[in-house]
Image (cartoon, rainbow, N blue to C red; front, top):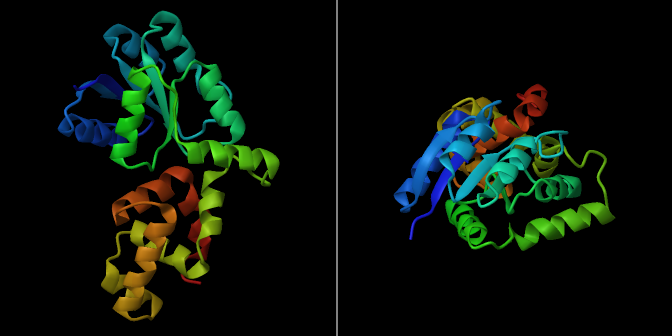
Length: 225
């Protein structure tokens, strides 16, 4: 049976795309909106069973204030946060505010749907791997634990970073190969490795993830090296 839900995200295009995907899977999406001062009020007025709340900065002060307000006014609404790989305090802040779950924003639609169903059932919707990563970060903190763009950048070789920048600029395999002076087959292999390391299924998803996490801003100066 479908879930009555709302999708709220900083990026309206992403919110609408996620809402469309969930509708195709039989869920009733009451609204897809961008967070603003009235986002919590909209959720409160529509009273969905589950609200998917996107954030790009789970560790920022006050980012989960809408969750607090929603849970105060509509305690029956389950809120699932969509965000980057968070620091331990990011996860803690989400649950302290009253969230029922936390899902990475690069999760596949099946994973998002599982989190929705768990949240509606009153269960905590957090991937075990996410918790393991959070505990690992607590034990071995990185220099900038909240910087998702820097974390992703460290996963890629300089060559792969250049490929990602070119993908984000809309270059196809032929143009990537010509621009980097490599064979198209080699360029195609580089692209597949980038998608695998970022955990995404398409070039569009890779470009969106890189833009959203600030990876492109960091990678920009490396273009053409």
